[in-house]
Length: 251
Image (tube, rainbow, N blue to C red; front, side, top):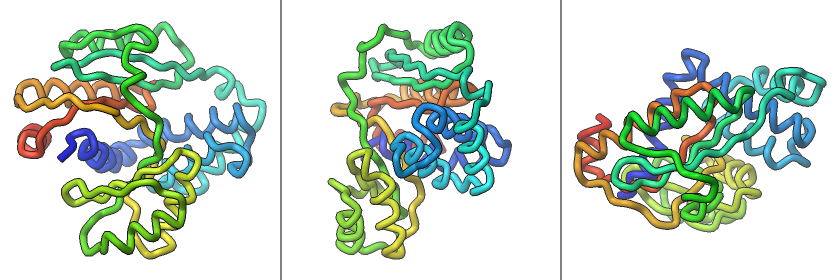
């Protein structure tokens, strides 16, 4: 069991609660606004916007919200112009590699907040390139495995351009090149399967096992606190917490 993969499922469930508070929708809207500003409001010709929309739909963001965000980013909106993408790299407890992607209108504030979060959770912020080489950008689609025939799901995913499918506990993880993320999701849904989540992510090439419960708690607390930052869009890490430990500390 990959703790990192299961964490994707946990994040998505956590996101449902965040959405009720409007916090997650605000982050998703910001990503759509900036993508539309940078590459135009037509998803067909803007891969970043296409992927931002796919992610928003995964969290049940209403179409009206998505359309408003696209319109805001496509126009001469001061809010969209103020934001910039910033990437932070560092290490968490047990030497876990962490990448933080943020959209911010105040680079100094965000850097200070992220650095403080690492420090208070037994981690440290590194320089550019410190851990990026340990990850690769992939599209990830999660499908509930309950009652699903793996061969049928594999055929449907392959139709959309998926490269790999694996079973992590009760969830099928479908991996694809980022440019085919939307097509893979649509193919899976067209075949009658329910998609739990679909988004562009950073997949670790190697993982660090964290089998100690105390260290696992520190790692997950670091993930939570980074993701709770309003400027942070995504957090990626290469930890592998055994399922029994993950269930004990995340339960």
